[in-house]
Length: 353
Length: 261
Image 1 (cartoon, each protein chain N blue to C red):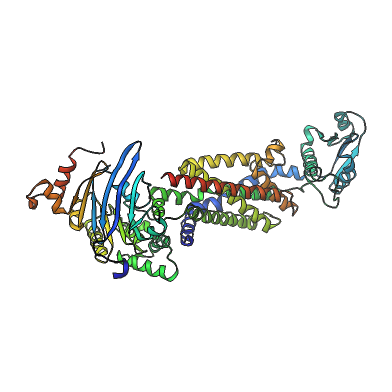
Image 2 (cartoon, rainbow over the protein chains, first blue to last red):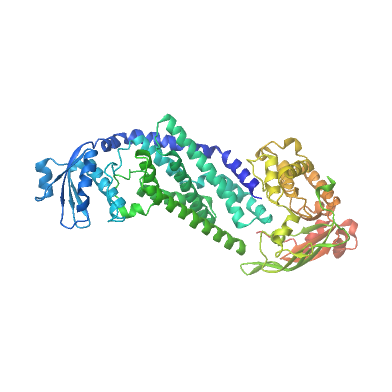
């Protein structure tokens, strides 16, 4: 029954030049601008290269049993760990020309850095953070380090980073794609005409949701393809990355359709939706790279865009990522929760009509 | 075109019955205990000044607005209890042009006709049939946004008749169009009626209502203040029915005071 409605809604959205401009051209233009603007900064991250880290491990530290593996993995990736049992970290860094110093406590660690070694300390922090997330937070006794694989992200260049991140970001701005359709339905009271036919709330929701997700996914998919060909953006695991991007479009669409359902105003919905997505992007690495951003980890971990960005960047650089699972779970949950809320609000509105 | 509407038994059977229909907004009754019975085969005109409650009444019949009180009986069944089944027997032509400009004419008709469960070859046949009925066959592949006002009005009608409804509700279908288009639409309404459809028609153009409606109700302040044939309404005001227009009857019954100040 809604097959033709979906088909025609698809046609309406595909025929809008604004959608082509926004979802195909904009990500490419924004990526090109940011790549040229931030390539130097990203090169400094690439240029961390080989460096030496001093370290000290307290007695009974949870890290104690893993230090050999950490040292070995570091060596494989150009990071030399040198143990200093005594001395002030600041003095040891200065006297021994260390890039930074890591002090492992009973269940935490502290990294000391200098003004000139922020890149190295960022790399070390990323490496240790990956280890803590991947190993210490899991089954402590059962997990052993795989030293054959580096556990921090190899250098990501600005083209790959922004080429991926802005596909994600524009995918989160899904509502704009439906602005023409929804506004026209409201202006010409087409929604009233649809309700005369007695379509259910679920049918009406699906007739809008499915084409919206399809058009936004196709748009950002085309942008990713063009970005890959023209700028050489490297996605790593393309199939898995595509699934994650489509899941995020679904989550964003469900969230933004709920905002529209609640406000009943396209302008207000776009302002609210974009504000939310901007904040999520700000925390999640859409503007400042998440590797070097100063936001606390707990805050980043609450952000679905952070999980998605990190999963996709790690898929690009390493071919695998622990964040694939967390981002997928978060995005599917968002889609489910917001869709159910959409249906509930739609039913309440209909019964109150 | 004979098959476009379901003829059924035309022996003065009631097709639509409104019983004590009431709708309030902000504690003000916009439609106040309305009782109307419409027979199969009628062209029933609903007149009233702005704010009289005509559109709200139409919206309640069409399931766009929920009544606060009262009952709508359509084809012998409670409409609100059997909405799913009965809404397929209803065709609603709204006053506003409820069509998508970025869809072609045939795509608009496809969209709205398919909502009633019609698909495949049958759907294609109904699209052609509906467009031919309103004289848009040759423009079926043109985008609706390129149409003139009159053509959009005709397309608006085509979108509501593809599922062969028994009852057609026209809410001011001739607003803002040229005399030729208006004449075409009025002829088509009469033709639909001749082919078996019952019609409810609202308009502010009294001569239109007088020309096509078999029975007319005048509504004011949410209530029916007069109902009957054009002649019967005129007799409420004067016995000299040859020298009075329906508009004069309307103004006498509803007053000359502006309603939307």
